[in-house]
Length: 60
Image (cartoon, rainbow, N blue to C red; front, side, top):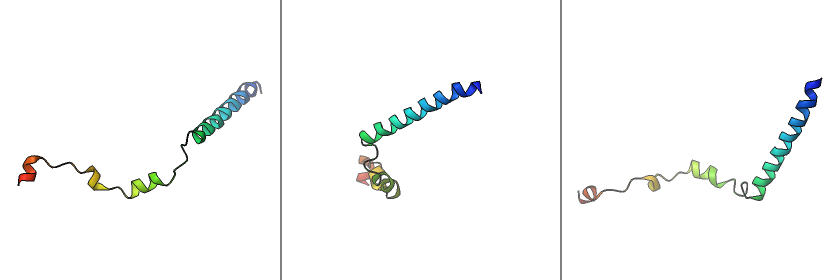
């Protein structure tokens, strides 16, 4: 029973911190665009990541 006097305030502090962190993220725009990252992963353009050709490869 005595451990509850210690654990309950710690749980309340942790929940308060999580709520504060959530509202900070919302206010800073972390949840503004939820669609772009999912589309970027699914429709990744391989041409953007292709290595540029060297001069020797371009001459051939």
